[in-house]
Structures are given as structure tokens and as C-alpha cells.
Amino acid sequence: MTVRTRIAPSPTGIAHLGTAYIAMRNLAIARQNGGQFVIRIEDTDRERYVEGAVDIIFEAMKWLGYPYDEAPDISGPYAPYTQSERLPIYKEYVQQLIANKKAYYCFCTKERLEQVRSAALAKKELPRYDRHCRHLTDEDIQKQLDSKAPHVIRLAVPETGVTICQDVVRGPVEFQNSGIDDQVLLKSDGYPTYHLGVVVDDHLMKITHIIRGEEWLSSSPKHVLIYEAFGWELPIFAHLPVIRNKDHSKMSKRKNDVSILSHRDRGYLPEAINNFLALMGWSHPEKKDIFSLDEFLKIFTLDRITLTAPVYDIEKLNWINGSYIRSLTDVELAERLSAGFVPSACSGELLASIVPLVKERLVTLKDFDDLASFFYLEPSAVEMTADDKEYLSVAKELLASCAWSKEGIEGSLIPAVKDHGWKNGPFFAALRLAVTGKKISPPLSESMVILGREKVLARLTLKV
Ligand code: GLU
Image (cartoon, rainbow, N blue to C red; front, side):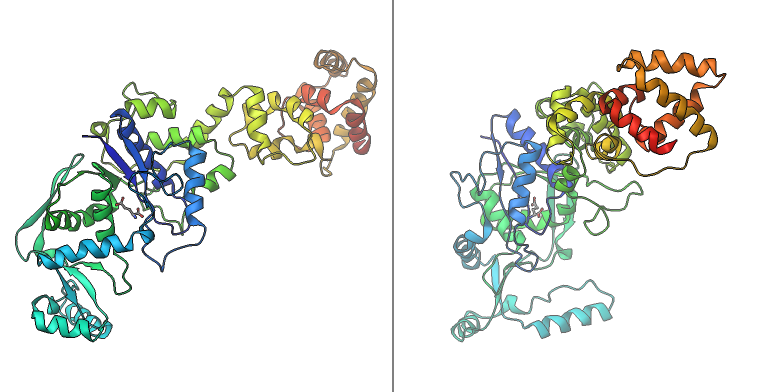
């Protein structure tokens, strides 16, 4: 058996961090077994479809560095990989179920379904379809079809018994059939529902492991029933805990920034995002905090998954990101920064000289501009005290003639501070503020060397 895994994102607007978290686990299981990792686009919910969302999903997968074997953009032996291009397939397969009486036509109108729903709610019962059309005669059905009555096709769920989802991380999960609605499989517009599409495609695409978020666990009995209705072999299921906020509430795209690409735009490195997501609901067997995607793909196992909800902890992500930034060479860091984080006022040459000074202080690439803008923009005016002005006039005189190097500057300023009976702290604080416009900055003497004598003196002149 060739192991085949997949993600099946719906193009509803953003590429979600949760999709990446699930994708890397699917990728790992496929890779470890010499199998394939497939991306299928589930775009059958036309109301939620967002133009351009598919491109965003692929842009995110590429940015994170997940190689995939089959997908709409590269095709493969089971193409097409986009559900809206597979409509005849679902129609054909659902007919098999109709023929075997595992599914049935339902001609109920919206109004009737609404009445059934309100009646159930009034009785404080779970609203569900009352199976009105399940027992129509063949004649009735033919008549309705001949008159082109709008209809859906529903699964004939067994009325009693239990359906078990054998989940490799949770063990067997039991569902009472009496609690499962007669699912719509094919909608009146000819599109399959998620349940039909996912099962038909996972079967036809020979997916062996369905590794997805636990939000789909409640759908799993419906899927098991559809596999059984077709007489198909069940895949292996693994429903993983979903990423939550620190207060354990669910992350949602309305309340949280869950977009992969917005993390890119906020200056996170793909290596850091992968490392951060790797540690969600799973731990490195040697308890390592920092490790590469390659390493994860080799050592991830489903049996080390913990079911306690993983938490999106921004401090941890920041720490991981900073640590990856510091592991880059200066040249690599300059390259990463150049991809959108350096304003045009900062030349490549200037960037190369600033990078070593800011590297220790960057949490994200986006911090660069805030830390370094004084190198390429004039700092805004700051208030100076009378003491500050005295410090600055002494500094200015010394800086006009000292050797222009870190040693030259410090060798000239430090003894002078002492000679005046001043303290280094307030003296250098005033100098830093005058030169950089900030109370905190990269190391001052090195920064002044890069800025150049002329600019430094001009900034001091303005303040004195
Ligand atoms: N289309 C579903 C989604 O948007 C796929 C769920 C599954 O993996 O079965 O996530």
C-alpha cells in the first residue's frame, strides 16, 4: 500500500495557520512512508468562495516550503484536483447509492424544511430532516423527476445502531446513528456537499490517511457511513486538536490574525512559523525547542500527539523568530530584510553595514525600520535639558577631531566625561537621543561610525 495523504482546503479567503499545521503533519506521514502528499481544493461551497483565495493557499504553501506531489497547479494521476471540475464524477457516484437504496431523492421545499425545523425547535428537539422523502414510491419519484421538480439527494442513514470512527489518536469514537441526520449529498445546484465530495475524492485519489483538525470529527461518522454505503475500504483517520488562543477560545479569522501570509508580512520567517507549528500538540522526542522542518518531517509521529489544545502563544513565536534571525548570517539576514522590510531610502550598502548592529535586537524583520530609521532619515526633534546641551557641546567638539572609529570615538569621549566629573549614563543617553532620536538604539559608537562624522555633527549642532 502506498501511503497517500492530503489537505483539502476550501478557498474561503485566507490561508489559515491551521492549514499549515495540518499540512506539515500530512507531509511528514507521506514522506516517511515514501508516499505522496496531495493538495485538493474543495470549492463546492459557492457562497463562501472567494476569488483569488486558491492562489493565496499556494503562495502560502510555497512560502512555508512544503513540497507537494499532486495539486491543481501541477496536476497528477488523479486530476482534476479542484472539486468544481469534478461535478460529473459526484453525480455518477451518487447514482450508485440511489440504485442501492443507500441514498434517496428529496423534493422537500425550503418552506417545508423550515417548518420541520421550527417544529423540532418548539419541541426542544435537535432540528433534523424528518425523512419525509425517504419512503416515496418509485412512481412518485419518477413523476417529480419528470416534472423537473428541484431536489437534493440525501444519505439514508441507518435509524438504529452506532457508527464508529477508528481514530488513531483518540481510539474508537462512537456515534449513535439515531443522532445523525440524513445528510444532503448532492445539492439542488448539482454541487456535492462537503461530505460527498470529500469521501468520493479521498477514495478515488487513493488517500490512505485522513489527518485533519478535530473540527471534522463530528463529520466523521457521516463519512464512515458513506464509505460503507459505497462498500469502500475505510482510510485511517486522525483528528488533531485545533490551535487555540491563550484563553482556550477558538481562533477565528474574525477575531484573530490567523493568516499565514500576514505573518510573513509582519516579519516572521517561514522557518520560525514551521518550528512554532511543529510544537503544537506535539513535542520533539529530545525536547528540543528549535529544529528544522526537515527534521520535523523525519521524526514526527502520530503517537506523540497530545490531545490538549495547543495554544497560539505570540511570545513563544517571537522568541523562536528571534532565534532564527540570529542564526542567519549577516548576508542572509540582509537578503531577507530586502524582501520588503527596508525602505528605499536605505541603500544596499548601508543595509549591509547596519545589519550586524541590529541583528541581536530584531524580533521580527519588521522591527528593522523602527530600529534603524535614524540611519537613513533625520530623527524627529527631541527636548534637551540644559545639562544635556552641555554634554552635547563637549561631545561635538571632541567628535569633530577624534579618529572616526569605535575606538577613536570612545577613546576620546570616555576620558572627557571623567575629566568633567560627569557620569557615563546621562552623558551617553543625551548623545544617543541627539544622534538617533531614541532612548534605545543599536550600539551608539558603531552607529555613529556608520552615520559618518558630518551627519553626527549636524545632528548635534541642531540640539546645542
Ligand atoms: N474542505 C475542508 C476544509 O476546508 C476539508 C476538511 C477535511 O480535511 O476533510 O478544511
